[in-house]
Image (cartoon, rainbow, N blue to C red; front, side, top):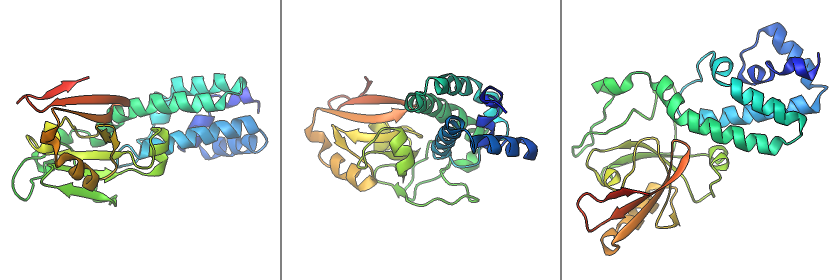
Length: 245
């Protein structure tokens, strides 16, 4: 089978959505075609990055219905042998789509169910969806009442796709209404990158940086939100102190 005939099958192969016969056909082809083999590897890398954005499995049909444009981009670029450029374009686009779209389809109507709201030990209602599905327990999850947030460390795969250094990146899972985290502009699903140009990758580092926050008239919080890097400027002299930059 020629590469052109693989165009609509390689991404489905990477997503595990082929029949047994189709799977065998594609596997035989990529074993003898370095270009298609590299294309499949890129799809799998993107899928791995998406799986880190939210808990749960990617629903059936997503590769078929949602990835048509990405499949076309990768296929066209493959013939020009610009694979590195493809990976960057596809990963950036899919992370942007994934944060909003995957977050919605994987959580469903949880926002409308009061049983999903978590109460802090000392009071305060969390404004988010639960981070952990009991069927898929996670590690490195931190909850801090003084900051009013629950956060999760991110792994090196996602950090690499977001182009962050090892001392950057912490996934904000839950934020307490009117808590300190909300007051400095953080929202559920943000990836916290840094504070005043200092990298942050854990709650302890964030708490240490916020100890003397009143000494600074302005404070800049850097996050990745909906796939885009964003600076939130805090004016500590104002009660309503959030200004999105």
